[in-house]
Length: 100
Image (spheres, one colour):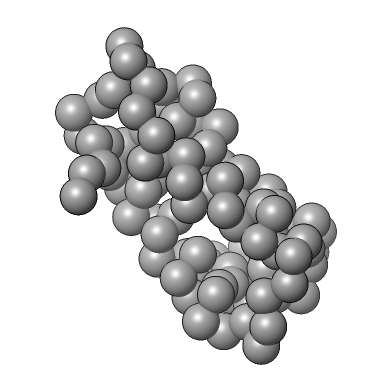
């Protein structure tokens, strides 16, 4: 799952979001891992606006580059998109409040 990172490590380069999304398109387990990062952080109260921005941009690129979005993909994308929007009393962090 993490093999795609080796060229970046050996070259000392930063991982671009395009490369991350490409890996997500190739490996559904990796996609599940990336989409679970924000919901886990929200549940533990460890959210920051940078994590939200990363998550939104990555998921946007993933959906945009996907040829089709099937039920399995929606099953792990939907919680990742909705979790930041659900309000949990006592766990709100002012740097991560999402509202309309």
